[in-house]
Each structure stands twice: as C-alpha cells, then as structure tokens.
Length: 243
Image 1 (cartoon, rainbow, N blue to C red):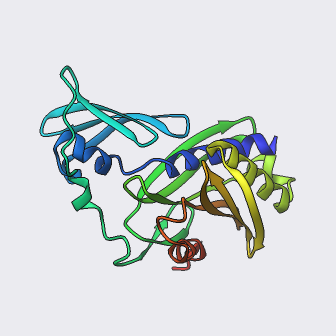
Image 2 (cartoon, helix red, strand yellow):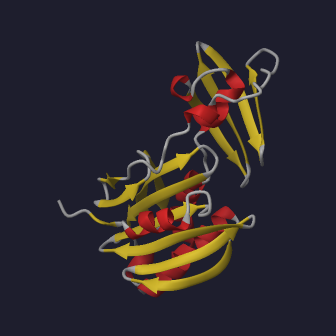
C-alpha cells in the first residue's frame, strides 16, 4: 500500500520536472516574445510528447512537440513558418547571474533556485486519506529543469507504520517509474538519499528526503546542461525554513 500511495505522490512532480518553458519554446513558432505568450491546455503524452495552446496578440495556436520536433498552427488556419533565427534564442534568461532562495510556504521548505520558480499544487485522494503535493520548478527552455516538491503525509495510514528506509525505497521506485528512468547509483545523505539515474541516456539526479512530517523530492533533469556544480548547489540548498 505504501508503494502505491507514493506513486501517486511522485507522478505530479515528475511530470512537472519534464515540462519545459512552453512560452519560450513556442516563441519562434508563433511570432511573439515569450513574455507576451499565454500557455493553456497543456497535455503530456508519454515522456517526450506533449500538446498545448499558445495565445498571443489575440490569436490562438495549437502547438505540439515530440522529441526535438515542434510545430504550432493557428487554430483554424495554416501552420506558421518558423523563422530562420528563433526569437527564443535571444530571450533565454541568464540563469547563472544570481541564485535566490525561494520557499514552498505550505511545507516550510526552501532551496536556492537559478531563476524564479513556478508553483503548482495537486490534491490526491487515497484509501488512507487525502494529501496535497506542492511543487516549485525553475527551468530554461527545453534544456534543464530543477524541481522541489513536498507533501505532508504523516496522517496517512499507509505511512505511519513504514520505516524511513522503506519510504525512501518506495519514493525512488515511484519516481523512476514515473519518468521511465534507469537507476545508476545511490548513496545515503543526512535526512534521506541521493539518487543518480538516466532518462533516455541523459544523467539526472535527485534527493529524496524525509523532513519532520514531510516527504521532499529535489531533482535536476538533466544535469549536464545546468552543470554538476550548479546541480549540487540546488540539491544541497534544500532545507527546512527557519524564519
């Protein structure tokens, strides 16, 4: 029962971690700057495919992507030609400029992010009770994403009698299954475990933590575009908020 419950907990965070900055990747295909694009109707299909609606200048575009391919078509019209030099190339944030701490207030945890994160919450009901997973994600186009997620689960029956080691095992297995990951290695850290894995050959890393009455996951997917030093900076900065 514990494993099934944790699968429900980990899937929303895993899907968020794989979602790129859709406004940025759509910009060169709809002819608007990312700041002027509104994204709606996002729907992930498997690991590497998704569809969404991009709105700018009063026009709506149906966009879809699979692997490295992306297309956007005006709703009710023909596909928009892709400019030779996409606007997104000039509008990507300088993520190395300044790192700042951001907190998920509902869980009282914080971490240093390379750019201001987007926040999300998803409620899940189980036979053991209901819980809410809170997530914060910072990403750069379709290159990398860092995600911090948490849930207060101490009141759930499926957790009360489980050891920390078994909870961490279940968190790891659920996370890998959710993203189609392959385990490379793991090591104990204070409060939990650090896990190395690959997704489609790309090295990723996450920390699985049990902090007080909270289950916490911090992930970098993938590591290489962000850099191992910056990945470590994010992962090692996760902590309970003290103020």
